[in-house]
Image (cartoon, rainbow, N blue to C red):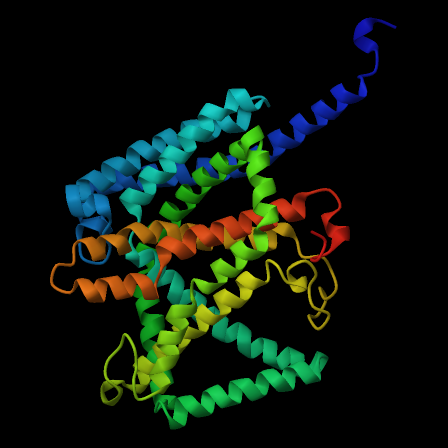
Length: 394
């Protein structure tokens, strides 16, 4: 037996396994970043060759870069960041393990994410996300009531009673009508179909920005500072999660006020049409659902699916089932924070209204807090023995 054939020492074998795990953890987001970066560069090239297709050249979408430098600058930024993202993703995917060698790539990924968020961040992102999530929240709520009535009658009856009270208040106090709901549904579907090209742009820009952010986080987590930061997050994950869950509360309260004679951030009570009321209630439902789902990061059903859920009840919740949508939501909020803040800085006619809007929709607070809460959840679930420890095992 030669020296090369001798079995590895335990420490060497452990290091080899850790390096292999690190490499695998980097490759999947690197491949996603590669595709998203190429798509973003393609969009930028298209906008240069066909400026009329650039959504940042009109009134539908605007970012800090488009406002200051114009839509051509957005197109050039998309090409440059997209091309750089392709090279970066390829280097991260095929680079050998070793934090020191990939650390500079993490810095570049973070820089690309910041540049892309500034160039392509628009209020349209959070507007589309809010409407889609609000609609899904209403559908999911109705389905949940139906399922729990069969599989967990006590819970189902409580949820049905709460829904009945809200519906009665909407009809008798707010003036909600079936015609108003139908009018809203028709307008909502038509708007989504008409804005499909803009939705594609938003998906590509957000996907590229989040993929670069993910690469930066993965590299940072593998460093010594990343381990210390992860430990700090786990120690404070409950406080961080509660703070993140408070982010959508002001907006939910404002929309629920539309059921009173004193509606906030909307038309006067006598000018509130049934269709507009349906829109506000749907968005408010989305805000309430966002707060509840965020609390799931520290509640038992964030680790194990509730027993009343068909087929998956009692099974462990996959970490990615919480972290992937959580990070996507946090990214959309963070990207939208800068354009929202610009409305405050640039509002000379109504600075009080702009300040109030930044407090009712505190993306500058909600986004970072949600990102930290999801990161803390991922670090806690990823530690050794976390599944056995359960939600209370701190």
